Each structure stands twice: as C-alpha cells, then as structure tokens.
Image 1: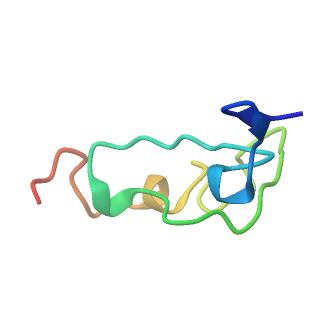
Image 2: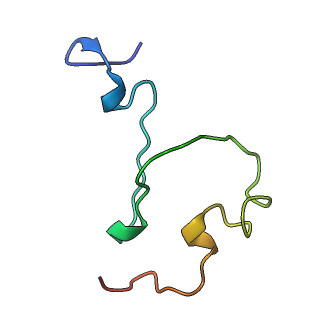
Length: 65
C-alpha cells in the first residue's frame, strides 16, 4: 500500500506509481505519461536512443531559453 500523511496515496499524488524525470531545460520535460512499457533494449524504440529528444540531433543540450 502506498500512502502520504497516514492516508492512502490519491491518484493526483501519483498512486500507485511516481515518475521522476529530470532535464536541464524545462521545455523538454515530460508533461504527462500516457503509457509505461518495460523493454529489455531501446534498439527498437525510435532511433534506438529511447526517446523523442534523445533521437534529435538538431538542438544543443545546453541551449539557452
């Protein structure tokens, strides 16, 4: 069971799963999670790097906003 402040953790607080995604630039943050899929390898996802922004080569990682 998951809880917060002695009560069952409600959906708006991430029950039963919380996902922490950190990036330097806010415009690349995940805004929502539609689905979660466990895979053994990232080779068959996009260009094989695992995500939309990871597959892009036309932006600077430390680009200013």
